[in-house]
Amino acid sequence: MASHETEAVVLKIFDHGESDKIITFFTSDFGKITAIAKGAKRSKKRFVGKLELFNHLQILIADNKFSSLFRVDEAELLNPFPPLRMDYERFVCSTLASELILNWTADHDQDENLFHLLTWTYGQLTKNAPKPTLLLFQLHLLTLLGFHLHLSSCSQCGAEVSISRNFSFFSPKNGVVCSTCFSLQEGQSANIPLSLGTIRLLEKARQLTIDKWPRLHFSKQSLKESIALFQSHNAFLLQRDILSWRELHSL
Image (cartoon, rainbow, N blue to C red; front, side, top):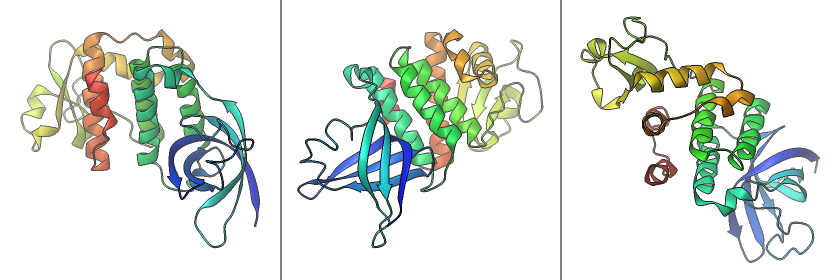
């Protein structure tokens, strides 16, 4: 069986049998993969403290000719991001970032940009405000996936976003629409009202590289509106709910 070495982050774990673990990783070289770690529950050397949620690892995996599962043979801990497990808000935001990757990516679809976005976000979540960091991750995730949100003008009539009109985010248009155009749309339940400040903040964030994210400031209103926008838009695009959004709302 061929062996491969790659960087990986742990997205999901569950026990298998008396001594094994099944882990879903997002890797730099192979995208999302699922692997079995034989004896991981009893291991006192190879895997102790390594196969945990959010951990950034260097792993050695082997193909399995009898199964679609890889086999994890070795794991070296690169960064455990301990604050993500010590603070509940950071934990929820990290869990949501992991769930978004789980839901938005296909198995074995390699994307190094997504991998670096996720690891960079985990790092930022250890030290910066969790909710804004998570929302910026979500915004750039959609951009990398090809869902370029239309935020600078009405996606129906082209009217520039300004204080003279009210705007809402309308998922079927993948962008904002003015109040006049929105009244003509069907399926208005997909409407998320947005203030001018929130629209301009998200449009500015979309244009910035991730190293400049910490310069941005979300007001309480912008946080609330952005969470509602991304929760609704993900549900519309994926045709399923991601439950961690509800937990984020409650914080």
